[in-house]
View 1 (cartoon, helix red, strand yellow):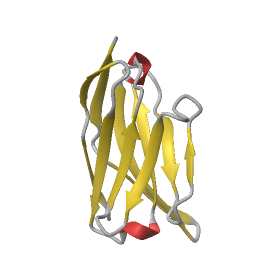
View 2: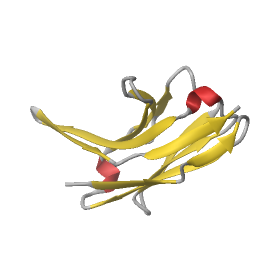
View 3: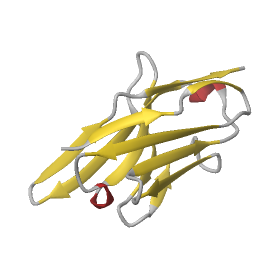
View 4: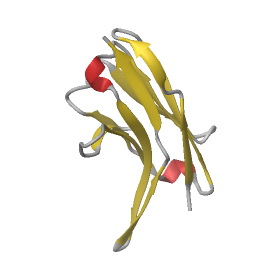
Length: 119
């Protein structure tokens, strides 16, 4: 079992920056792939950025070059540095921990943190 708690969201002007954090507890953090998703009202949840247990990263095309995902296994925390924010980045950002095992998978979600970008 993994508990995930996001923080760092808020209101920022277009062009500004925010840094989201996701603190994990309850299991061995380093074995999980971690990801940030976002969801706007009435829309589906979309992957923003992903980092594997080995540190490889990938990003949605819409955030490449602006967002950076990183992890600190010593602190059981994953981060999302968001720069040059745009109004269309407004959403609830959710942290995800995922790991496959045999024929199954562990999949955990945080409660989300609101990011609002004003124009």
